[in-house]
Length: 132
Image 1 (cartoon, rainbow, N blue to C red):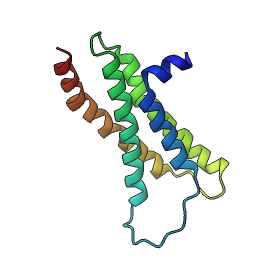
Image 2 (image 1 turned 90 degrees about the vertical axis):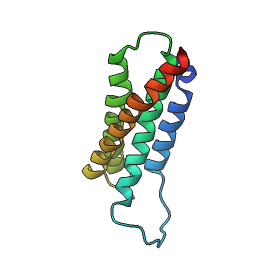
Image 3 (image 1 turned 60 degrees about the vertical axis):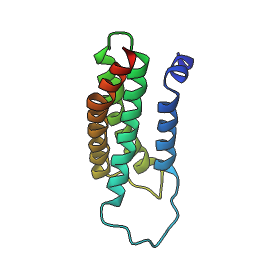
């Protein structure tokens, strides 16, 4: 089963591992004049990328078959949202230098939405067109 997912979703797994790393490493202290909400923007970008990559690989794997949409909703929408919540809980209880933040979790959800919309309205028609 693990080999199946490694074969079918290698880039998605890479993005998941990257999000885990970025979520748990201790960032260096830097005095850059970042704008307020920069952290939330990074959460939106990470989870838009994660959801978009999950959608992309899912759509490519099923480009010549009917889409099992239940799998897509679970794998590319619900799973990244749940993953974001678990990461926030992990940051709160497994680290001393990071704290779980509900606004970060909302930013994670806010990233899944545009990632999914982009995949559905841009990537899906493009992949369907290329498959014909």
